[in-house]
Length: 109
Image (cartoon, rainbow, N blue to C red; front, side):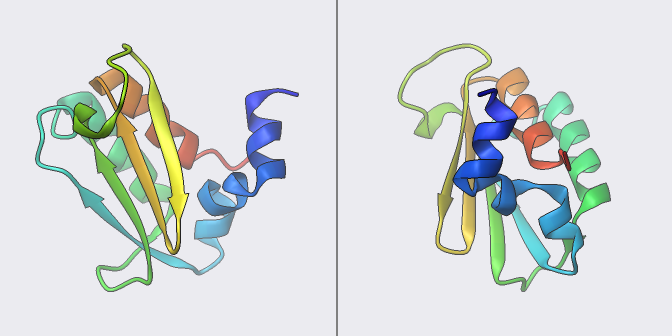
């Protein structure tokens, strides 16, 4: 089973796929002020994500995006997407990892 199929079957795909967001479910995106989250590649990926979601600051569903301070292992390009009640926590050690994570969120297949 590939990663995308696993995410779909585990339910994370439903929480993170563009079709779930695009179905009129507004989301709020909270971006950390750390250097990883504020890097140019991550800002580009956020711009791409914002094209496929309905943004609203007071949305009940939130995506929290941040850098390495919450990732246990300092592994380049690694990322985590952790579902919680009405929230996804997205973390990565470096900008490329965070770009990969954000791109996972905007995949609709």
